[in-house]
Image 1: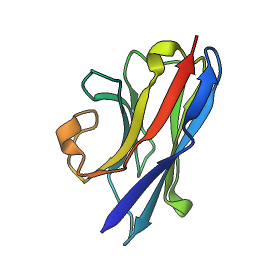
Image 2: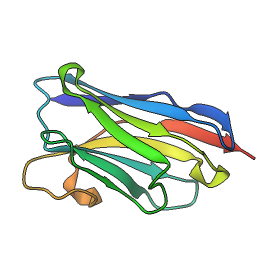
Image 3: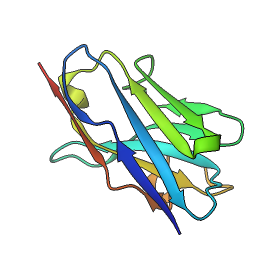
Length: 124
């Protein structure tokens, strides 16, 4: 069983930056991709970014494109989400999740292992 643990959340002013980490532990971590999602209070969970674990191809939601960057460190079983130019509307709980082979990125139901989330709060 693989466990995913997010870290790096916190309180930041608008315009600031944060880097989230997603560490996989347990048995051998060999996903097809790792995605990042977020859920703001009173809203549905939404996809924001994904990275193919093999070739590094990335996908971003329009709302974070050009501000957020997803990356990976295969050797350390860790994915990252660098968030720049943060806005108050980026305030949410951020989750990482992994998807198995043949499952497309960006579709929430395609991700079968989830972390517990980390809170990001952006003040105006």
